[in-house]
Image (cartoon, rainbow, N blue to C red; front, side, top):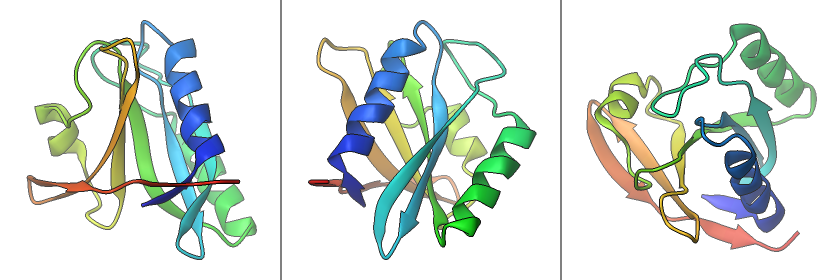
Length: 132
């Protein structure tokens, strides 16, 4: 995954801002690189899981399409656990074409990792940070 450094920093900031709860959102891509992020509201307001508001999801995808972007990834944070998919994350990974980004705040320095998940199988995905 090719990700602008400013977006990488923005999703970490969102995760820190939304503590103690999980943060969540979408990443949009154009021409093979992530060019935008969409912060979505965690309606569960939980530190263990998240659910997105369907109206916000629809609005984000509509905005992406209007700008020639496509949905590339779902991201969320783990406030106190490592940046790896939980059993629930794997179960809820509904689209094998998407990437699933997890921001861990368990350590003093945040960790961000990306995964492809298909049929319950998890495969790490490299993140390449791009200058803006």
